[in-house]
Length: 174
Image (cartoon, rainbow, N blue to C red):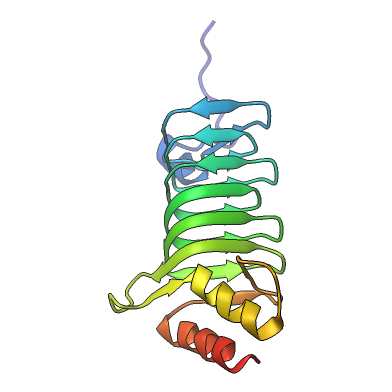
């Protein structure tokens, strides 16, 4: 019934060795009303109405979130509305985010959209980018009818210096 472990076979990794690799999936047919808290990487294809706190959030194109997101890394390919607090935010070409975003690193793929307020962690308190105002500036410069921030080329805003360069570009219309 019970056997001794075979020393020629590799041992099963301990819980602590696999802890960082934990992965949870919420399928496209799942709707959750309530908060989610996990130490795992969370892949979301379904809908969540509530707050999400996890190690890393990967939102698929069918994913929808209404609530706060707090994770080290956030990748958005679906629609999200609320507050995001993260070290690194990646908005994919199909991603649409509306709300308040606090980040250290921000990358937006061509076609990705942000609307709301952006604040870089570690930046001066007055350093807040109002994405709607930035979009209005871009609209005036390009005679565009859209009121969301759309970056035609992939953009990375990593610190206050990059944000200032973005503001200068929008002011000059270049």
